[in-house]
Length: 141
Length: 186
Image (cartoon, rainbow over all chains, first blue to last red; front, side, top):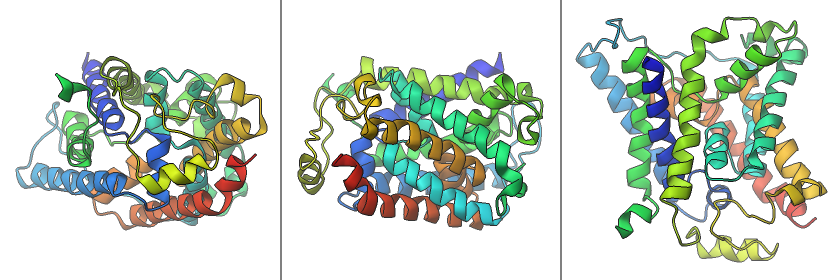
């Protein structure tokens, strides 16, 4: 039942990505060429909004819907963060999409993006296959 | 009525995207992240004997509902409330893309690049299949994508996410400016 609320949250996220044109291949090229403020504006308003939300959740000691304590997300560092992020950056420039927009693009009727999504799933699978041999790869669990 | 179909300015879309961070934590300690869904699909459909995919993916099913919502959101925004005008990118970008005969149309992606027909060409194969592979491989290696590191990680002031986001952009900027022009010219 609660999963329907996660679906609904996804609808809102997808709608904002689509109407904000963050799923547009054109916008991504424009961003990487520093020719418009649009995408940077999205990041520069999304991050402080998220940070403020987190701050208020903690300040008011808000509990989750199930009454649990909210756990602050933590990220640990390993060399894979640098190498993997660069690899993802190349893919982002090519496809004009990070994983979220891939789903939303399919929703907009670009059925061929199913192929890009399948390639991304295959890429994830291949990483799992070879992670032990990669620098920092074994940190990913 | 016109307003419904117009694209949203960055100062409307950005804050809504950012609100996903506290929203998901409040709903049930869920962390905004989309690249995890690719891993869950692997774990559910073809885990093999690969360590990365040996976990109970059913516990993470919320994430698959969330990305299912993204599909619907894309449909609402891109079909139902579709902007009738082509994406209004900056003039220098329009000029640059015109060199490669890419003209913004009604789709959010160039139809002559992202099509079934194009998939059979070297250019289309590189952009969709190789590009998609790099997205999936890189995000798992980096343990997150633009949402997990760029939005959630930075909102939570996690410095590894700052390194990740800087490297996403570094990779994208280098590739877009130095390599992509050769691929687009194919």
